[in-house]
Image (cartoon, rainbow, N blue to C red; front, side):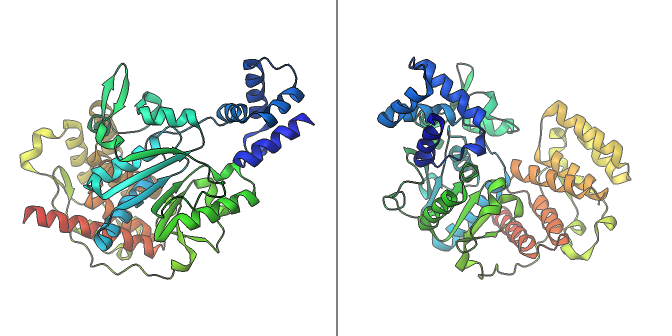
Length: 421
């Protein structure tokens, strides 16, 4: 049957399991290509595909519809920053990162922005971005994006790394120069032979389109190009299909990150409990930074949150009132005013942090964790958000994650002490 022949071509070329996208999607793509080349029958089109590599590429471009945006599934970028801090401290070498598939460039550029915002110099890392689609790579190299690529991205980040151009947003040159784009296929036999190994690999939301046999082939190639001690990030729907003889999970469960199986026994070092750091803007007293296991959530209350006198003018009135209400125990009204302040003045790390404290005090742990993570996204050096995330991880029994977050908090404290000392 013609359709089976076409299905075989797509499977052999890109490993596509048609059931993963649905026959309707493939059928629409086929009709589009047949109309474009004025081919009247599916059988004739199958003949053309078997003879024309160019038409196979055109069909692939039509079937593979990129769906991505900047900082998609943000926890991975938080873990990336933590990993790179430790890696550079230990090795001092240049960090090599692979983004596969890179689609239209949002992921590899997000990686570069994460590292640059984390004070890692451009000459200390490089991102190789790989995709099978020529059209996607062309868009990525152009680095010109519309609003759909900035779902939930903070305006300050956009202003920092982009400039307006003809109604779109053009990425700044320093980020663009940190990423190289190349067309390649993870299933090709020589995928691992013509590239050096990487410290970090992002391979998210690709393997879901493969059957088990093809996934195994892809994982074997990933295993060969990941350095010892390196870290692999997968998509949420792919983490359950990882072969345990090759990779095992590490770090935050929400990051879907993995290392070589034979390295799992390496222990995360113990960290000295971090002390509270005075922050610019809203901050809390040291009591909230108690040892994670010391209090059940029901007993945690909002301690007094102070606003540094010299920065009073920069704090939105509604947010300041929300702080006062929270200190008085009126959590519902404090939450409402905090959201009003964010709606009027935009999202800030301290607003999300305050919301996290409010939800934490109300024992809404999922919402609290979400807000603390958003605060950390807006300010990767947010000591208090790190401490509270450590508390939550410890309460869930995730000692490794709690300790990892405390290590990050300790490094933030050390940096601040160094800067202020």
